[in-house]
Image (tube, rainbow, N blue to C red):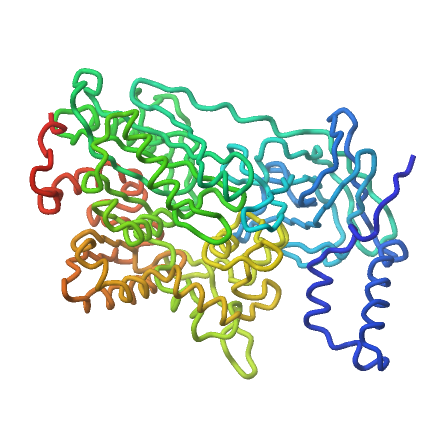
Length: 604
């Protein structure tokens, strides 16, 4: 029996918002623009039922037992190849396959959804733009949960379920098996897709002799989000921990993307039968063998006689917007900075015998983690005693990758009276552009509206922006056109432009930050992150009363994410964060530790 389809849910809100925001069409037709807008809206709503075009009807198999209304983003995926399921073939690179999305609000059990040719997508903007041909097709519902925020707003977002905010792997998401079809957007035909599979839960990692895990409910975050919210960490225990029950240890905090478990540490030698793979990123064969060897070498160093005995942790703070929170307090994500600093870290130190003082905590990380460690050091100057920031996300919004948020008018194109030159977003080691700002933002908009894609630009918006009236992050620029909102840029500057904040607040925080800031980046960073570091370095050099005594270093022709090692290629040094920075901090701490600090008992 054919189910009723709500026509309102068949029109992409991206299309409607863009039309009514940017179109003056009604002004030229009749003298009653409001009436004309209503007429156009009605035509758009009913057009899928009259258009001579191919559509997709999506059903949910009753065997899944979905008995409640569902909210989320319905994603249609098409691929020209079957190297993997279509849900795993969407990327920022040239090999990306197709994704189209529509918001779902209140999908009733037993009903279906219709995806028409106006569905918004990436790399092609509309489903109607897809060339006729044979495709492998799949559909997936990325489920949303309703949150009643402390601010009074109600929002629908995809809660992380242990996967690190990846829509194609999120437990509980439902999807169809891939099928091969012939698709022609010009042909009047309805193709049926049946959702019959569910992504299973992720098994929690088990404790070992050296690797432990902790999870706590955060009072601060639970209050903000209106439901239980948790923080976790993977903890690497020092050698001799049980044999030295009276020793308390410094805390090494490795910030970065969501760590399902602590990787890069193995008590077993590499598998001699491991078939070597090829790394497209690093242009070498056998990188999987290198990774295993480095993990085993780290274990031998960690347990060897000369390595500093510290607790090394990786924090889990995935949230409804991204795989981590950027470790700061923000309007849209809530008080993650306070929750990590004042709830999670003290609990770790309590359970695992940490020293529990700011002088004995230090941080390191790359990319997202690089920005996080610098931000946490600046916002909590006395709670941490050193940050080692590799290839940090933009630390100065004059260089938001290739955009000047304070001077440019458009995020997607260079300013020009007549040209429309796309801004690059990513490059390789030779400077060849692999993707543009518009393309990557288009991908995010296809996967999720209202900053809900789980993508890089959407999380920056969620962290840095004020909350809009609807409870979602306020856009820094129009996601369709790229037009920059200068009022939002001004908010970003005062709250999260680290270069500006350090300079502005130096009279208050300078004495607490002296000698604690270390920044490293390659001068051919893949995402142009070196540009912001140049500006930050110029500012740091000018600081006085006191002088900064900061370290800024560049890797010649080095890509993302160079971390300060001039002796090894990037593909090796990226595997050695713990070894590099724990030893570096241990060698420096005597110059920054307070009088009477214990610098000996943990050096057994």
